[in-house]
Length: 300
Ligand code: HEC
Image (cartoon, rainbow, N blue to C red; front, side, top):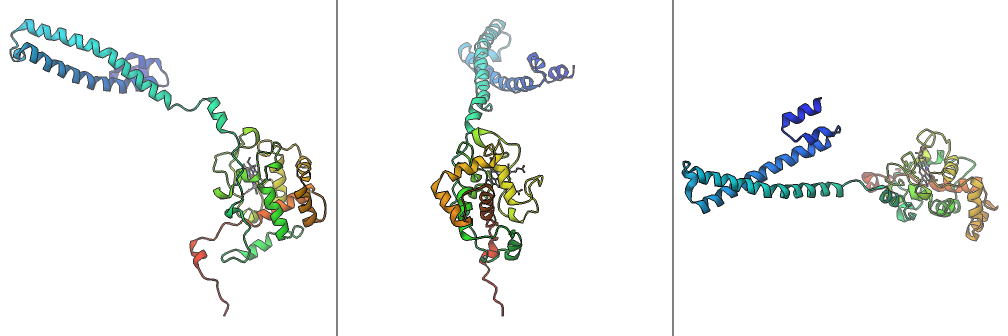
C-alpha cells in the first residue's frame, strides 16, 4: 500500500496509515519533528544537570556506574516529557478545531436577510445631461410605451428600495442590488426571503438598460419583464404572483396616490413594472475620472 510505504520512509508513526485522506499522517509528521527538537533540548539539559551533580564524569568515560546513573536519569526525564508532549499535541489539536468552519447553526444564522439598503447619494437618478453620459444610447434604450418622467422615476425608486414588495416584507430589489456595492450584493450567490440562497450571482443593475436581454441566460427581453420575475422568484422576493405584490402596494395610501399621479389609475402589475424599469433606466455607471474632470465641450 503506497500510503504505508511512504509513512515508513518518512519515519512517522504508524497511526498515519489509518487515515486514507492522509490528514492524520501529515499531523503526525509535523508533531514528530516538533517532539524531536524538544527532546534534544531536554537531553541537553539533563546532560548539564548530570554534569553538575555527578562531577565531570562525562569526561571520564571509564566510570561505568556513573554513566549508568546518567542513563537512568535520561529515561526518567523522557518519561516525564512524554505526557507533556502529549498535552502539547492535544493543545495543537484544540487550536485546529477552533478554526474549523462554523457548524450548520452558525451558518444558518448568517443567512438572515440583511437590513434593506437605502438609496443614499449613489442611488439617486442621474441626469442625461451630465458630462460623459451616453445620452443618445440612453434615449435609444427607452421604450416608446414607457417614457421617462421625473415622477415615474421617483415612484420606481421608492419601489426598488421597498421590502413590502416581497412576500414577508424583508427583501427589496436593493437587498441584492445595493447602490453602495455598485448595485450588486457582493456575494457569490444571493440571499432572498427566509434566508434562501439562490444559485446565481446578482449582476449589477448599472447599465442594464443597454442590455439586449436580461439575466445571465437572457431569458427576459426587457427590464419590465425582468422585474416581474424577481418578485415571484421563490429564492428572491417570494411572492406567489405579481398580483399579490400589487395588492400589498395598493394597500398603502402613499402608493395609491403616486400611481394615480403618474399613471392616472390605481396600482396594477404592468404600471408597477414600468415604474421600476424607469428608475433602472437612470442607472448608468458614473463617468471615469478623466471624463469627470474634463470641462464640457463647447461647440465653436
Ligand atoms: C435575492 C436577491 C435578488 C433580489 C431581491 C432581486 N434580484 Fe435582481 N438579480 C438577482 C440575481 C441572482 C440575478 C441573476 C439571475 C439570473 O441570471 O438568472 C438578478 C438579475 C437582475 C437583473 C438582470 C441584470 C443583467 O445584467 O442581466 C436585473 C435588471 C435585476 N436583477 C433587477 C432587479 C429588480 C428590479 C428587483 C426588484 C424587483 C430585483 N432585481 C430583485 C438577485 C436579486
